[in-house]
Length: 43
Image 1 (cartoon, rainbow, N blue to C red):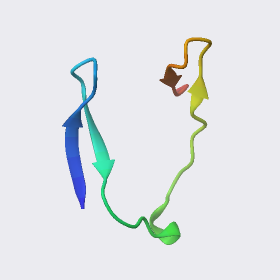
Image 2: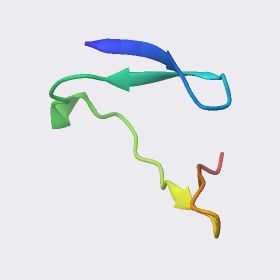
Image 3: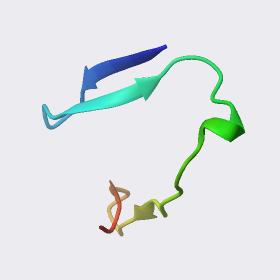
């Protein structure tokens, strides 16, 4: 199941609890990590 949860900054993000079947993936994006260990995605 998909659950929307608040992040540390208060923004809501979807979190998957359970199995994600590979055939359900429609796009991949690179998750970057900055020097402070923060995560971000371009575009």
